[in-house]
Every structure is written in C-alpha cells, then in structure tokens.
Image 1 (cartoon, rainbow, N blue to C red):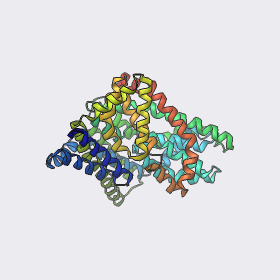
Image 2 (image 1 turned 45 degrees about the vertical axis):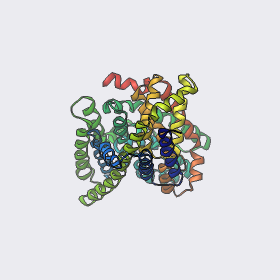
Image 3 (image 1 turned 120 degrees about the vertical axis):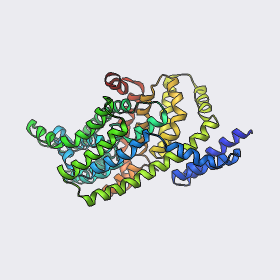
Image 4 (image 1 turned 90 degrees about the vertical axis):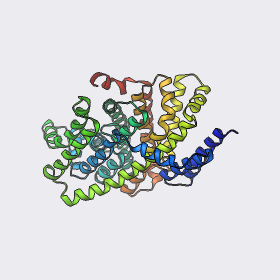
Length: 430
C-alpha cells in the first residue's frame, strides 16, 4: 500500500469511526484531517492555513447576516401573521390546518431559511392548534417537520450560500431563483399527501374561502414578505451583492420587528443576537474544519478516484443520478447538512456535471437530500426538535412521517430528472 492510499484510508476510516462514536462533527472532520496530514509527514501549520483560507471568502459574509435576519424575523411576531395568511389561502380545504401548516412553512422559510427555526417557531403554535381541532398529534408533527424543509429551498437560505461558495463560480442569485419552483413543488406534493390522509381520517375543514379576508391578511403580512423581495430582487437585478442585500435585510428586519410588528424589544434583540452568534460559530467552525478535510481530499485526488469508481460501475446517466441521490441520502442519516454540503460537493459535483446535471440544479438536489436527512434518525435535528415540541416519542413521529417521506422522494426524483423545475426561473430572470 503506497503512502497516498494509506493516507486516504486513515482520513476516511478515522472520520467514519468518529462519526459512529458520536464525536461532534467539527471534531471528527478536524481530527481525521490532522491524522491524514501526520501520515503524509506534512506540517501542522497547514491546518491553520487551510482553516483561515476556508472562511476567508467574501460570499460567506452573507451567512451571518442571513442567520441574524432569520432570527429577528422568526422571533419578531410574524409567525402568527403568516399562519393567518396561510389560513386565508388554503384553510377552507379538507385537512385545512395541515394545508395551512405547509403553506405557512413556505412563507416562513422565505424569511428564516432554516428548517429548525420553522419547526420550533411554527410547530409550537400549529401542533397544539391542530390537536385541539381533532388532528392526531403524530400526523400534526409529521406535517410540521416535513414542510419545514421548504425553507431550505426557498431563498434566502444560508445553506445555498455555502453550496455556492463550495461549488465555486455559482451565482447566488441564480441559486436563489432556482429554489422557488422546487420549494412550491415540495409544498404541492406534501399537500396532496396531507389531503389523502385527511380524507382517510376524516380530518375537519376550515372556514369557507373569503377574498376579503385574504386581502386583509396579505396587507398585514406584507412587511414580513417584503424582506424576501429585498434580498432576491436586489441580488437578481444586480442592485447589490448577496452580502449587501443580507446586511440591508437585517436592518429592515430589525425595524419591522421593533416598530411595525412590535414582537421584540431591545432586550429581545440582544438575546437574538447572542443566539445568532452561537449558530454562526457552529457554522463557521464547520466551514473552517471542512476546508482542511477538503484540502486533504483534493491533495489525495479522492474526487477523481470516487468519480472513476462510480462511473466505472455504469455509464447509464439515470442510474448514476439515482446513485448520487442515494449517497446523499445515506450521508444525511449520519451527518448534518452543512458538513455534507462542504465535504460531498467537491466529490459528487464533477460526477453530476459529467452526466449533464447543471451545477445549479445539483445544488437544489443536494439541499433537498440534506433536508430529508434532517428528518431521518439517528442524526435528524429537525426530527428531534419536532418530537420535543410535540412531546412525542421519536419512533411514533417517524412512523407517521413515512407517507411524507414518499412525497419528498417523488419531489426529489422530479427535480433530478426534470431540470426545468430548477433552471427555468434562473434562465428567464437571471
């Protein structure tokens, strides 16, 4: 066994051993990289150099602003207003509160960009509300956690910024636009599944549709929805960069939360900023340590070897696309979202482009796969949050989520094999 092969074995074996031993992911990535460098006789100063290089990116400056924006708007009194707007849109249907949950997640995801924030914020309101109206608690929780993944696809999503940086040369604005239709497709798929289950279990309808009420709720929610317009329209139209738009959106969110919706006071703002720093520190540590890991992978030519190995199994692009999805789904079961994007993108993106998948389309595929991973044991963060909010055993929630897993897989396959879902809007507007 030559030195390079030994280094690859040390890197990957130590990484997966630490993952299964439940090491924090940042430690697993960093320590396996250090062991790999030791096995090659390289100086440990490389670790510091690559960590600094990994986070020294102008594009990544948008990430803290998006996190703060989502935290401000998420705790600034907008949840109830978005729920009321969603109820005015779809509450009249059979299983109306399930539909409200899904549509509200689409709106809220465009503000928070976080599945965890969506589940914690909307779930704490909607799950008890649904149970009081006659819905089963496990069904209500399953709808909440699966619909929260819409927020990963609907911009602004800091995970899309991380993917754009990792993939290199990808337009953040195009990636933002690419998420709208897949997010709506996911919402539609979940609504169909919810309707079928609602008819089967005879869940209640809401009040009849009222255009007057819809216009009223739209006017109340306008200030919240306008935050998304600032980010997306500003970036796509070239008025400012993603980083500048995120900074402006933070100031706008602060004004709306403090003076319009009045859901926050200055004491609450400082608390939100403290929580945002905690979240940001986790993200930046992952990016920095993953940079070392990526350096080791690139130095050892692992992406090229992996591409050769996978393409050597078959030349059929359909089977290769399915294999890419399967790899990402398996990774989602054992890793969190940001490290998957940072580690898997350099390896799998060349394979995806070789079979004709556009890098922007592949970004949407990666994000949705990672979103499904957030709902699967043993590492599914959103699954744990949903179980905690509903005070239900995780096993019961997983069982109730199975029909919705199917809806998400169907959406994933449509996005994978119909590029227009991801690429049409960027091609028209970008």
